Image (cartoon, rainbow, N blue to C red; front, side, top):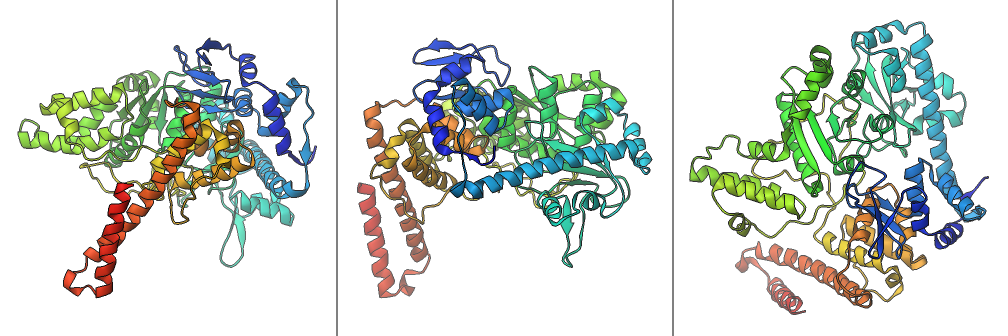
Length: 618
């Protein structure tokens, strides 16, 4: 049936179904206090960490971070898209889905464009696979795959294909009309140069379909067969493909394994495929980007242990240092990260072919725990037998430990550093400056993505700094007010009707990712104060993961006090912003020698100092 599902129908559906009943029909729940619990259906665990809140009608797993409303649960559990999940729930509730046109045409058109892209990418995958089987120039591609030790069965499992030589094979087949050309351009499979000439992006390459968590082809990677550059080429980002969120091989890993103990993160497509050829079916690869927190959160939905695998050269060591920094904020108690450095000159593909799967799995089993790698990394070049060396070690290591979430693991890491320096854990923590902002969930645009080869990541702009974790490009918009903004979001999630009250107005100059999210949440809740609907709005996004985590936090104040606390948090956020503006202006004036200040500037400085003092007293 045409048209978008009416929002009013979704509201009615969520109000009539009970998330406890929806989940209990699929996963047996047990009453625990006011909530219900079970072992999480989205990752392997023995102790239940999956919680369902009947009052707020959402679920959250404290182990893997999965969370959302009844619709998102059915989508993930039954591998359905949004309309299918709504239709399934509506059928179980005896309701007929209502769809709308009119004002929703623009959104419906956008969704139709995405469906067109999914369809095109699936057709392209089939075209490339057929070319690998039947094209008259396929022999070089087949020879390459055979030389890499790959069987026809493994090529079929990963949907490998062949983009024949020529500038317009895909264009001729799928771009016969203007609409087809537009779809090819939107999918990134067609390139248009400055002269307006259009040609295929992928030519004379082995083709690797990249699938999302539901198995849909969303992009391609290509390995050149001739002498063209680059050696590896990825699809550009599109409306259905975001490199910072996707992992090559993750769909195949989920399909192959009912439960997982660990996931191995490698650097290239061929590494993933070669390992699968040798029976190691738990490897994934990033897509020409560094590993992000979003990548890790997706992995933690399936298992609690991540093993990073790096080449043993200098580039591999630098990549490991970046992975260490990314991992730290995600290491809640019960999660484990380890580091495996292969012998120099080897990657997983060459090593497993030369030494075999048993040898590589032995190396994986003995991979270096994060604790060992962190202290080896921060103590490099230091003589820890001297007091100066131990002081330098603590100076280097403490900024890393500060980024760990609060918990037993963080305390144990402080204890480990204490043993290495001769100080007590309390003495070490007493030397710390003000704590840094709490870790934020990576957005899907956390990194500047490039069409780089998985083994050829550009490191020219990177610096080898061990004194403290490098400042990330990942969050350029994170501002000082983001922590308070998240606190306000958490309160609104627990009592969404507060959005309709006369809340303090946030200044337009107040910036930050969480502040922007807070503004949007307030506007959405004014229209419909529903936590489940809000979480459905950001389903399967970094923002959605953040909302699920915040919604699952228990409030230590009574319900009637939440409104007062929200007003207080927003007022503090505004004062903090005002104080920051005052500090910046005061610093600007103080940077000028006092005798060079005009009378007006001196008066302004005096008034600014007075205003700052008044803010402190509020």
